[in-house]
Length: 151
Length: 34
Image (cartoon, rainbow over all chains, first blue to last red; front, side):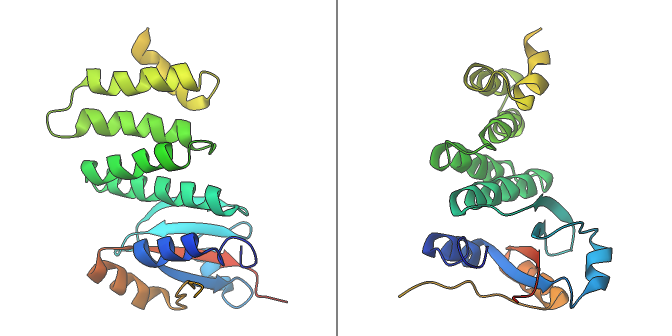
């Protein structure tokens, strides 16, 4: 991460704009490894200001995949904080800017959730997005999870 | 000029900073450089 992903300008800009980034060297802080149940390095955790965990990812990620995961993470955080317009924006960013990422099906699934929960949204709005998920990523686990809506 | 990530090392103060700035904290657990 330190040699390939973090030195990229677009990664540094995104990190400084959206996060307070904290680097923890596991050998220096075994108590934090235990507290946060970290099994391997690198492990990334996204917390809100109260310390509540909203997302975690384990293992090296190249720059574009890392940015896709971090947008997904912020989408999950906003969704769990019931800020549906913000969540919608982050999930849409994953789809629009990181279209080849493996997390696109997950972003589509939760974009559908946002569409139905946003003010004035309906189950039909969710279903329209899930239809795209089923059509574009039929073999994904997330298409499987959405399939009940079409039975 | 290349951009650099502004890494912090303390969790508690970073949580306070995140709350004040309406950001989130990203914890990166990694090995120390050899």
